[in-house]
Length: 375
Ligand code: SF4
Image (tube, rainbow, N blue to C red):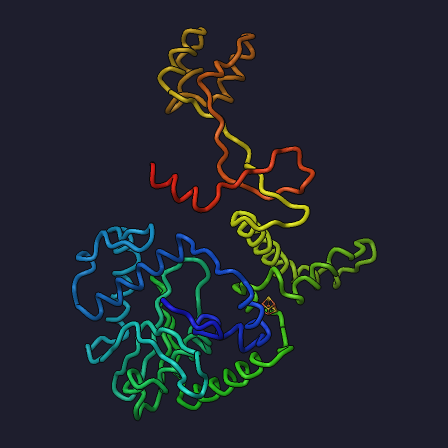
């Protein structure tokens, strides 16, 4: 799905609160997707197909998006409860709806658009509904900037405006199985939101647009390079603990989540840069600690029994790890059969340049691609 690089539904809250974030986020490399994001996209794709085709969820079993596959468990725990929610919202089956509609602001805000999960109409009420398939933080519908963004854009989009034509109220709904959050508002509230958005986008297009921290920073990709964040981090490092009183400590605690988020995102950006071949002064990529495993479980078992180890010393649910076997062998003054052990690192991690571990040699991307074809 294409996203506006100025502001879309999911970034509306950040841009309204922090117009300066637009320019900073545009400088950041594209963030890699995660299995949770891919699973969410898979479920969004399938539910929109179901709504428009009226096929059963089961007929989409096995549908794939990236590495994610639609399983019966996902159907039972996510798709069916989401579809059941529509029966609660529309018990008399009066709703007309359109799924996955691209909505935009036309000439008012060029290049600002988003994709609304469901635009619908029942009687005098227009409906904007968003599926949330993640099971982390629960999202509220009241004054939800993402839903107000879709409503405002839909009112200006030819393919979606039918749902708002003559509507006296607008209902914003979040379906996050098993929860449904609903909030009814007015066209005037949506117009007021649109005004806020227009001001923020215009401010963002000027140099030195204001930056402001808040809970909207949580999903901001620019955290690692944001002066508000780096300033907070530098100030935190300079604090003399002895001189702090209790209220000051509480005030710093409030910033802890923000700083932790900044640190996590900074580390993952640095790792992403090093893994793509960039150089960072004083940092390098090293292999994570290697964990030993048997090259051949059966041969290892035979060798350990030959050393006189008992069944319970050798076997867990599978053969014991080399580390455990080594401990037992040591007590018997016997060495681990090294030729049966291989140490494999589980990935790369960041380390300071004076770390004693050797630097990881990165295979060129072309060589990696060529090798992957040989597997
Ligand atoms: S981290 Fe927060 S303050 Fe910094 S650019 Fe992003 S939203 Fe704005």
